[in-house]
Image: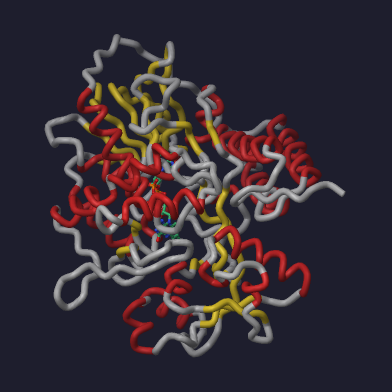
Length: 481
Ligand SMILES: Cc1cc2nc3c(=O)[nH]c(=O)nc-3n(C[C@H](O)[C@H](O)[C@H](O)COP(=O)(O)OP(=O)(O)OC[C@H]3O[C@@H](n4cnc5c(N)ncnc54)[C@H](O)[C@@H]3O)c2cc1C
């Protein structure tokens, strides 16, 4: 059995690719866990778009400014110019973004956007609503609880994947493979990502000699409630600050203005670094104050945050909430072009958070990532549908590599700790070299393939961070004294 397209991942990028492929094509979506376990499900704030033609250059400029000169301008143009089309497509298919009483889309503002251009659904549940909608629209079969553990590549052409399904490995063949497997959250001790987002495909690409790029560019979210035992922490969306939430120290002082005149509306990297620096210098805890919100408006506009914080014992919006930065988003990833193609391997595509299209440069502008997933997934599918791939009959042996060993769990936790301590918001050469040595030591031990994926990805992040000697965007490296 040969599929026309295999899609690895059922987040927004994978599912939007799927619904753009006609029903008569043989498509298989492969998804590691239950369908809701993906970052898309957790997206709160919304989707950015250029609201009209006049806004395209402004949206482009805001994205370029946030990216600190490292964006690919062509990719940003593609993102912005196609934003209205993909959003209209979702609306025409029946998706309901939040609107006012007259049915007009409600636009909100987030940090570093020069105007209100973020649309949302379910108040603060955009990802959940959009993900469910795309699942309902998807006409193709899906294998869940099945993990891709290898790419079948010969002579720089992709022929399919190996999956681990009920602890058994088997090959599945396809004319085209789209990787939409998301970011790297589980590499870090504190993160906001779904727990199964653990850099499998990035690590697999390293093993296969497929280039990853901009791996030093890892984004940390400044406002996360981290006082819980779970690795995945509760994110408090940027839209809160966009609409009036403030950040203060133990004494109620809004210290962000010491760092940037935009205060709470500065970009994420600036706010994360300011909190990190201020805490280090003063020892003060940091809080998100919601007291500018009127109670009923808050419960309606941010119903999930309201419910979650109430459950945690906070009487919001009256009471302030302790916050800390945590790992949030992988800007770097599998090198891919404007059509989502992986340049070094024929018939292989990467879209969504797993890809590096360079739209985000050195820092991602808030709410541009759902948009990136939608725009580039569509372009990848259009490219596939235009191409007429004829495949040779090639059969691959199923490898019998050990996937995981009992001891790997402790090593995974150690890796998370190494990454958080040495490769997070503020980096030093010494810390990065320590991390590299520890990762190399772990790689020499007897470990399962799944841990190897994590270690190889982590190593790429460290090597890229060492190679970029000057701070820029989300990458902050302290000069040696
Ligand atoms: C808490 C939170 C809030 C956010 N808020 C926003 C927001 O408001 N606006 C915005 O634009 N962005 C937001 N983001 C970022 C955005 O949600 C993600 O970047 C985006 O959803 C990624 O979509 P994706 O389809 O690429 O990956 P994901 O949605 O993460 O999906 C990845 C899929 O790949 C599967 N997978 C992974 N490995 C394998 C494997 N080995 N085999 C098979 N399947 C595999 C997973 O099971 C999953 O189905 C937020 C992220 C988080 C975590």
